[in-house]
Image 1 (cartoon, rainbow, N blue to C red):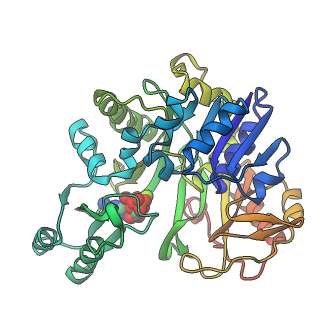
Image 2 (cartoon, protein in one colour; image 1 turned 60 degrees about the horizontal axis):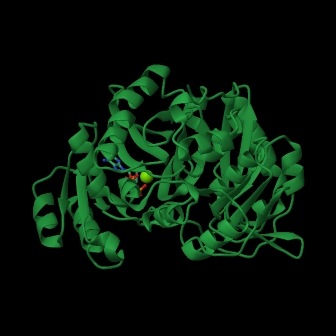
Image 3 (cartoon, rainbow, N blue to C red; image 1 turned 180 degrees about the horizontal axis):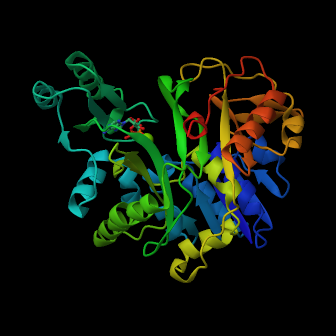
Amino acid sequence: MKALVVGSGGREHALAWKLLQSPKVSEVVCIPGNGGTAALPRCRNVGMGVNDFEGIARFALVNNFPLVVVGPEQPLADGIADFLQQQGLKVFGPTQTGAQIEASKAWSKALMAQAGIPTAQSEVFTNAASALAFVQHQGFPIVVKVDGLAAGKGVTVAHSLDEATAAIEAAFSGKFGAAGERVVIEEFLIGQEASVLAVTDGQTLRLLLPAQDHKTIGEGDTGPNTGGMGAYAPTPIVTPDLMERVQREILEPALQAVKDQGIDYRGVLYAGLMITPEGDPKVVEFNCRFGDPEIQAILPLLETPLADLMLACVEGRLESFPPLEWKPGAAACVVAAAEGYPDTHRKGMAISGLDAAEETGALVFHAGTRKLKGETIADGGRVLGITGVGDSFEGAIANAYAAAACISYDGMYYRRDIGHRVKAR
Ligand SMILES: Nc1ncnc2c1ncn2[C@@H]1O[C@H](COP(=O)(O)OP(=O)(O)O)[C@@H](O)[C@H]1O
Ligand SMILES: [Mg+2]
């Protein structure tokens, strides 16, 4: 079987790599892929945009790729799954209405309210005046969220009325386009964040190992938010008891509520959680795709063939699919970024030491790279995800850092404290 992966980040490199380990899979094509997927055996890149739905459909049909795995949220929110399904293709990823669970925070909040899912109290506003009037009478911190997709730049934790005012004015300023037509203002939740991802065929859920990521650029979890500077799995903060509660109190009711709206949801249902000091899980947000870099730490531990699992999801056979099998131990992913990230960052630096890094036993997933005359060139804010696997967190983290030390490019930056929360336990 051949499989198509849509996207160009570290997540898509990890997905292509894992799909190729499935005995069923003979070939993977990434659209558009990156320097890492270009170098994978039995994998190649095809240079089309992720929003070229017609081009992707034509390629899949003409070349007989029955399974299309969509990595990022934007094409899902734009209806790629609907379009490809209409052409008779099997798509791992929800339809446009299903993707609203991520693409509209107001829609997602309404769904959670209807399903009785624990989450922060919130209000939705459609203009700045009413939002500004509301925050006059609130305590701080308070959280101001642009409704639509904003590439991680749409949320402000406001610590004062001034900060909340600035965030509301920015949200409605037009700079977020249609994503900023509505704003959600919500209660600030205290605790530790964790991610529980599940895959689903629209009826049944299978939970993946729980993960945690490091969102900010600086060590000690300081500085501006990024797409994610590192991740690890299975995080011990989400105990088996808590997993059970997340399934029963959050993921199952969410899927039921989605079903009740007539949505046939096949793909990833990802719960971004706050684990409160009392030990209760509350939803910060839902996502409709694999988390990046979390999935770069989760997939290396998965023993079950990924292609079989995804086919069971798209074909509606998940209930009879065998239990997922996992390697014992842990995995940790350290993200290497370009100088300047998450703001304007450098590009075009030649990367050396990739082979030596892999010889340590670590996995090097490419996030923003391309191939140029046999060289690998940095081509994005997040450049590489370096995943170590070990019997323990200490071992996994040490493996990732040993591999990172082999790699160099001008302005290479990575946090030295990935996994500090689990190491301190
Ligand atoms: N209610 C909340 N309480 C505390 N922190 C929050 C809350 N909502 C969001 N955050 C913080 O802001 C980050 C981004 O918010 P999120 O809803 O995940 O939006 P997105 O990932 O779409 O940018 C979260 O990971 C969390 O750190
Ligand atoms: Mg988030």
